[in-house]
Length: 357
Image (cartoon, rainbow, N blue to C red; front, side, top):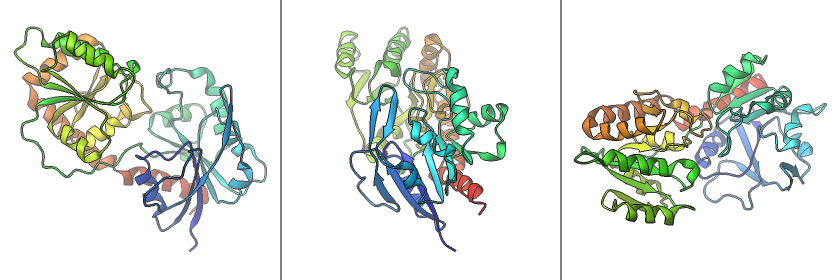
């Protein structure tokens, strides 16, 4: 049986998505090409073909310079990112006499550093208009499935490829975890100062707290260095800079009781879960849907305000075993439901549906 020719259109090939694409491209039924707007082709082993696309940005809108409709017609299935700023991609479903089946893939609702998850509903009508032209929709999480079904979309056309990352554990589990971890680019929007202030207040009147490891670089790096010195917390808070190597990161996850990120809960949620570390974040943190993997007080903590975060930080030291158990629950969930193979299955289910194979 011939393979299904699939074109996947993305902004660029992120390093964390490369293993996912390789898994999909390695499948016996799939002949995969990834077209993207990155400046260079990706390096390393690839189980897919690759094509560079080009665009111009005028205001908030992106115009693709390549003949995207002609490119798409060479494939049986096109999986395009569902971004309403790329008008030509959103018009793929409105093209008459197209030869391809179309799947839109993405968050499914508004979400960015400036907008909370599903906060900007005023553009839903436009998103729904374009999405109705697709043969199937593929989301990062279950949340949009419920929303789109309520707005008249057939549930059988809605699929989930749960957003995740590869976690390769090589070190034996630490028996004496003794730190709290923050990992990510150091922007104010991520709530790093909320964490620092909460940690400082949690120290008042207690004998000790686990040390706080901060991994990341960014605009606030030097300001955070100054904050730590000003508050005499150099023995408690260690700023390590950016670390990208997974084996180096594993050392920090391995000794961490919890990962804390007040205002952002993205793929670091899955990375933390995969390493058996619970994730702590605010109820309204920025997310692409990854926050919904957390079951409060079972595989992570969802808190409401700074005072709750202070209490959690203190409780980690008092009831460490409770938080280590939540970490084990998080690892079990990752192994059961969020391996890269689970994400690839979502793609395959949608592809098989639109091709009726």
